[in-house]
Length: 101
Image (cartoon, rainbow, N blue to C red):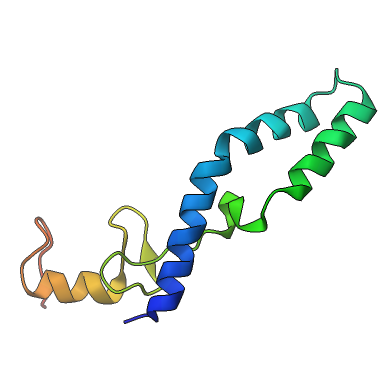
């Protein structure tokens, strides 16, 4: 089980990303628009840099929904390999069959 503080920190980042998503997208559109003046684009870049760092989507860490483990994460299932194996052994994941040969 991951530290609760790490999981909560990641949840706070998710909330910040959701709060600033529209503002960040608008500023990025201005920065990337070649038809705008260089001064206007630079001003938008400064405003973008003034936003909180944790409001950037790249700062979110994919974590297992079951255990909070940050590594060996399957995006499709939103869980780690350890949790997947454990739940699969109990028969709680439909379509997953325990391998034996």
